[in-house]
Length: 71
Image (tube, rainbow, N blue to C red; front, side, top):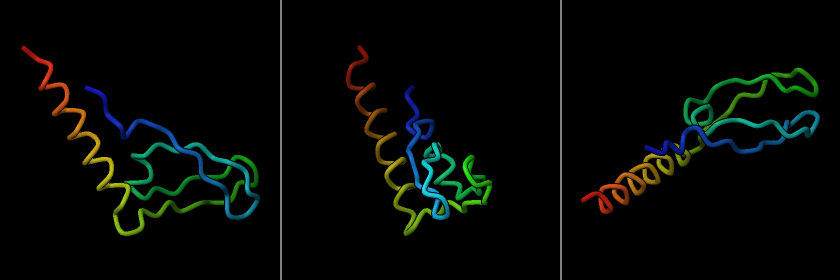
């Protein structure tokens, strides 16, 4: 099954503006990452749990679609 949590998105470091690639799982888990440009810690925040809800809904839709095509 496809798991959307493994997909990556780009975020800008609030300090140096360098783009960091993070997985949706890291966002949902609200991990702290280190910027590769300036070495500052970046706390990922899933405001209103919107990433969590989107991942859940997309994974459910993918699962439903796969079930629809099974004989």
